[in-house]
Amino acid sequence: MAKLLIISGAGLSAESGISTFRDSDGLWEKHRIEDVCNGATWRANFELVHQFYNARRAQLGTVNPNDAHRMIARWQSRYDTILLTQNVDDLLERAGCREVVHLHGFLTRMCCVDCGHCWDIGYVPWKSGACCVLCPSVRGVRPDIVFFGEQAPNYAVLWRALDSLRREDVLLVIGTSGVVLPITQMAQDCPSYRILNNLARESAIDEAVFDQVIHQPATQAAAAVDRLLKTRLG
Image (cartoon, rainbow, N blue to C red; front, side):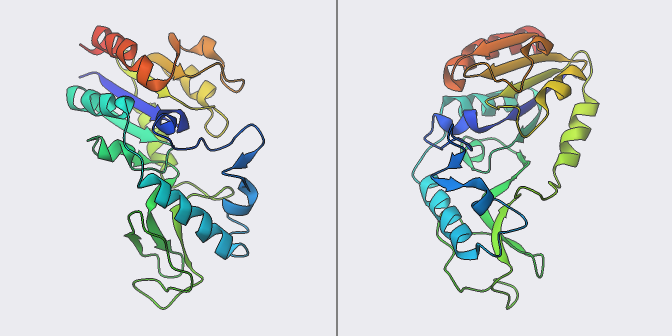
């Protein structure tokens, strides 16, 4: 049975009101990414890091999945689908998607680096000075986010999924700049049919390696992608 591998990025959730990771000025929600998403400095910036991700969780609780999230859920129910996302939000899950692999962590979850325990926190803030729910550690508690300079455990899932693709399968990339993941190389090495949906051309992605390129917001492109998938996968 042919399968569908979807890799999504910030462009998928942008239409729901989730800010993209890096604006043109190099800031994320007016903060330097190096200050709030750095594996080497998060302990030194402990209070700022928690304030930042508390605000991101609160924002996430005010937005809803968009039509592209819901279309992906329909594709998952129709096809043998592997769903990988660079996004840390839960909008795919709330749209009805199952077994979503979050490559860069999950915003509604906390982890303790001292005991290894992770737990769901939802959209509420993590209170300054609170300890881990399992052990006495305070300074070891952090958002379950893969910071820059850290290994992403689920990249192993990503590479296995890409290696599993065959000519009859489809690789669908939605809303990513290609700066963090080597999208060009991944598509170039892929034997399957390749579809790219981005808002506009990205300098880090060679669009020539894709069979179909759609420059539209994800919600507007969903119908065209749906037609392509019906042609390729039935």
